Image 1: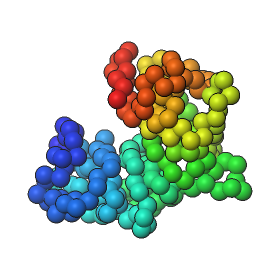
Image 2 (image 1 turned 135 degrees about the vertical axis):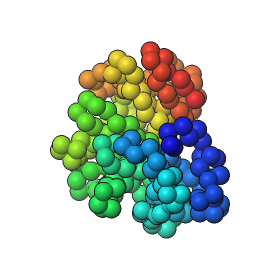
Image 3 (image 1 turned 90 degrees about the horizontal axis):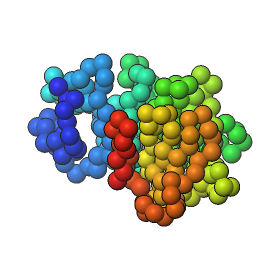
Image 4 (image 1 turned 90 degrees about the vertical axis):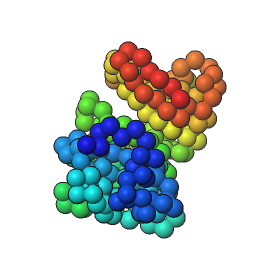
Length: 219
């Protein structure tokens, strides 16, 4: 089983994928919750790759365009979601079809910024929260197939340029966003207003969040 993998280094040591990722930058890993022998890898050179541990094989599912930089990979609701410098990719492992959501200046419901950096699935509304480099936070609803935007904090400060790096939801349903330039942000359950947790620069750049019961670990 691949459920106990702890790092990218462990993947790169697998003999049947070692050559494939020898000179590649791996940016994301995701295990198929319905089949623990399937691992999905997102990398710079190979794009989206399926590793089959039982068959000791690997195959490329989707190549990324040249000069597009992948950032994270998650498996939600039967789909693979990958953030990148070109937009948000949605890949269906069953059909091999994919979509790339990007910014469209003429569509107010499109993604706010092509450079997507992080994402998180929320059971509430079956929505996906997407962080961007310069366009604040987006919330994608599969029901309406559009993006809601969060450009400002509760004090009116713009989120543009905050460079979101990670998103998490705690046991109380509060949303947390770690940023490169604005510290740690949060919003109460059901609220659309983000605010700083303490002084904006108290924690510096927040690049990782992990919810552990009633605690949250911050990196």
